[in-house]
Image 1: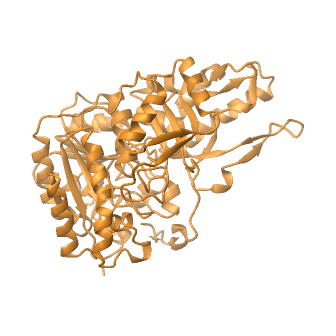
Image 2: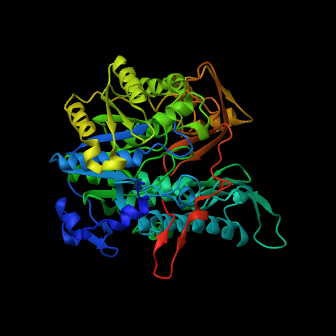
Image 3: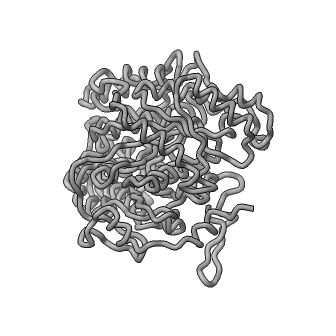
Length: 549
C-alpha cells in the first residue's frame, strides 16, 4: 500500500534553502529566510533566458487531475536530464485544503516541501492579501461614517470583504456602520478571488503594485460617479501590508530541486496563474520554467495566455495538456463511484473532451504535448486507446508516473517537451484587446467554449456599455464559470456543442486590469462539501500532523 503524501513528505531529507538558492546562483544577500527551508527572494534578476512550459488540463473530476504533481515531476525529470529547471507554482488556498480537493503541493513522490507549511500559512502572503483587502473595506465604511465627503452611495459599493476559507454563509451578509444607520446587503469573496490577489500576481514591482491598488474601483457616488481606492488616500497603507507578500517564495521539491511558489488565484473565479514577478524571475534564472494554470485549459490556460502573457509579453515554448483515464471516463458519463471500473465505453465517449482541449490550444500554439497522468487502476488497453487517439490527431503523448516514481516516472515526457521546445515559437493571442467587450466575450465563448449563442441576463449589456464609456473597453476578459465543463453548465460533459452560455454579471477589476464576466451559477465564495477534508486532520502533542494531503 502506497504511503500517504504527508508520510512521504515527512520522510524526505530537505536541503537548507540557502543551498537550493545557490543552485540558481541566488546570492545570500538576496534571500530573506523563513526558517531553514523557506525563503523569500528579495531582488529581481536579469533578462529572460529560459524556455516557458505551461501545464494545463482537460476538464477535471471534483478531485483534480494532478497538474501540480505533473508540473513537479516534469521539473524534476528535466533536472535529472541535466538541465537547470525551476517549477513556478501557485500558493495553496485554505479553502480547498480543508474542503474537497486537499492541498496543492503535488502528490506521492512529486511534491514541493515542506508540504505542511506550504499548504497552511506558508510565509503569510495570503493572510497579507486578506488583511489588505479588508483594510480597504474598513476604509470605505469609515469614510462614510465620518461624514462621507466623497458622497459614496452605500448601496453602490462594489468592493467586498474576503476570507481564505470556504464559507457559503458569508456569500450574503448585512452590514451597517452603527445601530442607527440603514443597513445594506454585502458579501465576502474567498481571498483567492479578491482583486488584490490578482493585482499582486500581475504587478511588476512595488510602485506598480501601489498604482494598481489605488486604481481599484470601490463603488459609485449618489451621482453615479466612479470612486477609486486612491480617492480614500489608502493605497500607501495597502501597499505596506503587501511589502513582503510581493516577494516570491523559494522552496524545493522532494528531490531537492528549486521551486518558486507565489500568488494563488483560482481559475474558475479568478485568473488562475502564479505571479508574473515569480515567472519572470524563474525565466531569468534557469533553462526551463515549468508552470501551471488552474483547472482545464478552457479556464486556466485561456487566462494565462490572454491575460498574463498579454501583460507580461510572455510566449510559451510548449503547452502540456494533462489528462487522466478517470477524468476521460467522467466526461464520458461514468459516475464518480465507478471511475475505477474497466468499462472502456466510458473512455470512448469521454475522449472527445481531450479532443476539444487539444483543438482549443492549437488556437494559441501547435507546440503541444499530451501527458497521461498514470493511476494504478489504469489498464494497458485504456492507456493504448488514449495513446493511439492522440497520435491519430498528430500529437505526441507520454505516460507519466511521477506520483509513483518521481522524476524517473516523467523522463520520457520531459524528453518530448525538450524536443518540442526546440521548435520555433508560434504563439499568438486569441483576440485583440481593443475590440468591443461583447466581441471579446463572444470570441472566447465560441472559440473556447464552443457555444452557439451568448445570452446576457439583467442589465449586463448596460454595464458593459458603461465600462466602455468609462474608458475600460480595451481590457482583457476574465470569465468565471464552472471548471467541470467547457460550457457554463457543469452537467454538460465531454465536448458539448450548440449550447448557449449565460452572462449573469459584469465586474470591473480596474486595478488588476481586466473585466470579470460571471457565467452560470458560479460563486466567488465556495462552500464546504458534506464530508470536508478537515474531518480527517489532526495533530498530536509532539506537533505531528496527520490527514493533510
